Image (tube, rainbow, N blue to C red):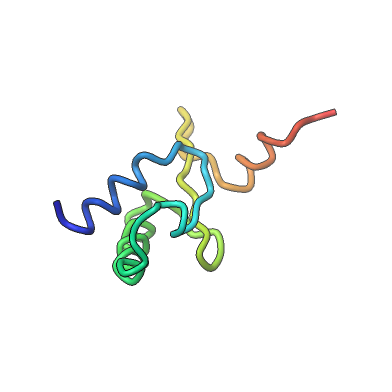
Length: 80
């Protein structure tokens, strides 16, 4: 299995609607440049979204399409 496939598999294991960073993938630090490139390609394909430097979002899918990160965070906040 190639490094790119291992990275993609780790991202696929992350639950939909989750914000994550490179560290959260639990892959060796020697791969970080490969990870950055692969995540950038996944952003380009629309599989994940980049929120800020080093922070990514795996969109939650609904019948209306992908739920945007800000909307997903608002839905997770407790309402009083």
